[in-house]
Image (cartoon, rainbow, N blue to C red; front, side, top):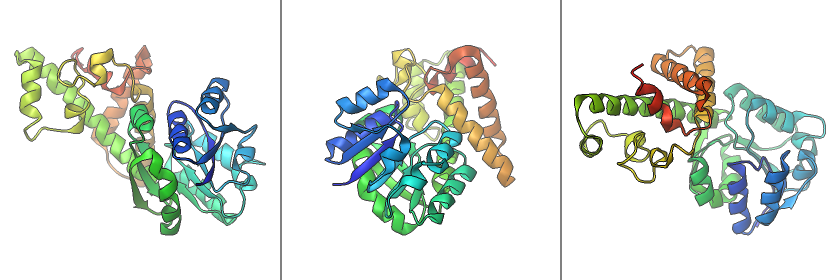
Length: 296
């Protein structure tokens, strides 16, 4: 079993580190929020006073942080992870951040002879709790091979996306597609409502036809057809609108940087920004149906 430092024990990181402890790994945790540390300790983890302390003497360090600025600070600041990590420590950042920052931080780690991977996840809080996340991993093949047994207790699948930064690239492309699928599924239900087509009938037909998509069959944006979907629970989040808004901004930044035309992705970003700015950021991202149903 491995000795793992874990930095970022929030809504995603907390259940992820708990699954590592359950698998028999020794986990040492740093977070700025005392309540998160209390939960981590209750799950069986040890606590560290600083990110550098969490990194010292570990086989691997995993981070799950809100944004690129925090990732850069935690890894590259004086007495941060890169400076304090022991020779041979594997670094794995599971945050969803911009591709440029991911690659630059990986380069800083490589300059000290450390293997580092960007490994953002898909699956939300429910997937984190169940140990059923999909990891999209960027980095060298040798580092990926080292990471697989560390990530396995948290994972449904662990996929090598290519070199450094490609994990982030895969994540933002996936979530841009997911957002577009959720919006158009919401539009379809809003249209069906106005045409007199019952929602269950609409679901039964489309889920077996060419319009079928994950946003419809697994995460239906209207109450009724999929009992486990947030729509049947007042849109309590598995993946918040704020998180989708953040990921769509990252996708648009990447598209601009790469010279890629993403008009549908841009419209999805605009709609989620509008939805969040109206005070809905804490709802599940499938609650975008509320905005679509207004007839916009």
